[in-house]
Length: 143
Image (cartoon, rainbow, N blue to C red):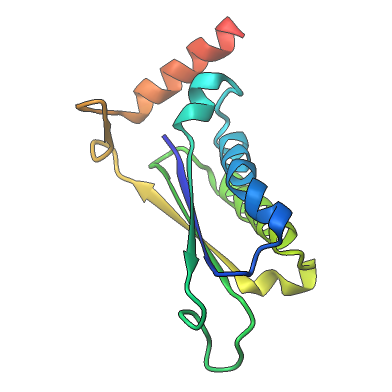
């Protein structure tokens, strides 16, 4: 199942953005993965917010906040088109949560990590991508 981790400098998000960014990012990820919008799949989309202490992140040029988003999905879950859409929407979501404009888009970096088949486990078992696809089809049929 997908995971998304946002790493930000402390204080870089607005109060409202800090309160909603994790659920917003999880929803973006599920949408681009093509997962059904069901309670089961929403519960499997883990979202982490990691806030770094002041001064822990900088560049050689300036101290403007930078945002790193790590996305982990099963290999094969995202086509090139879906990755591009995911990166675009994740960037917009992070900018909105920080109260920044599209002009600041280069402050947001998104790294998509594809977990190779047979290396993802949950509940004491290896989870295969084909199992997830079958589960998603079943969830759609039940909706």
